[in-house]
Image 1 (cartoon, rainbow, N blue to C red):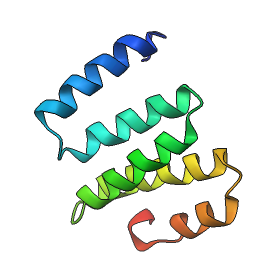
Image 2 (image 1 turned 90 degrees about the vertical axis):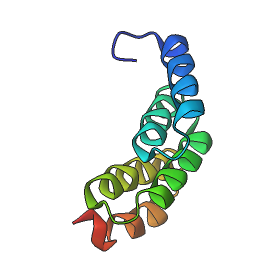
Image 3 (image 1 turned 180 degrees about the horizontal axis):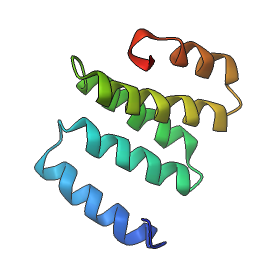
Image 4 (image 1 turned 120 degrees about the vertical axis):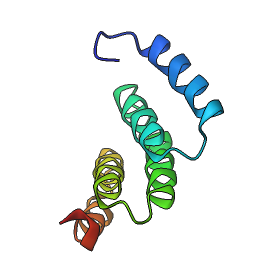
Length: 91
């Protein structure tokens, strides 16, 4: 993704998620990719999935929360993004 190969990144992440579907960091990366592709709705879904899988891991919860807030802002849902950023795991 860092080299601009969004198709290749998507393929790699899809393959990784088939192997490890409960890895929240993979969902965060897929969400970041979807944001880069201007698909904020898919990014939101990835952020919510990552957040649900990251229970107990504050660092991963914070990454998922940032993704979710970014996806909500991309959809002009700023108040919802602010509410996510106010959650304890974001501090």
